[in-house]
Image 1: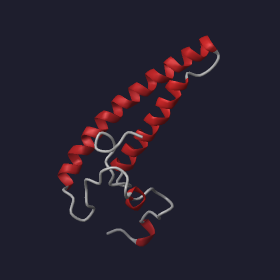
Image 2: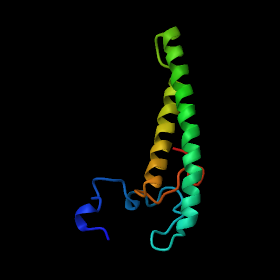
Image 3: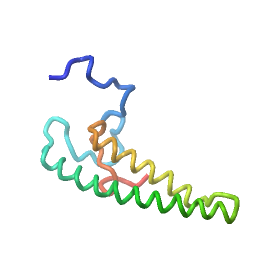
Image 4: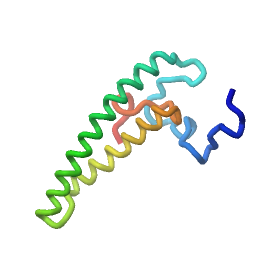
Length: 109
């Protein structure tokens, strides 16, 4: 049983209420199938690992670009922002702070 002092406050985490109207809310917190969520969490853990590798490749390429041109590549920077938002969405879903499924079940940000 979770005591009131252990519950996250609204300002501590991004909650389901903050996600309403954005993306596809696949799970109803009161009636969700925990096993299906677990399967989706495993899939997203694999996607997260792939995204980490992609982020590393982009960072190396950006570094090399900056060495050569003395300025960042704007396309890589925009992609990095977008990838960071997706990684955040996955982390929120994985930790239960959000019920919103990340891309491909919702729009890419």
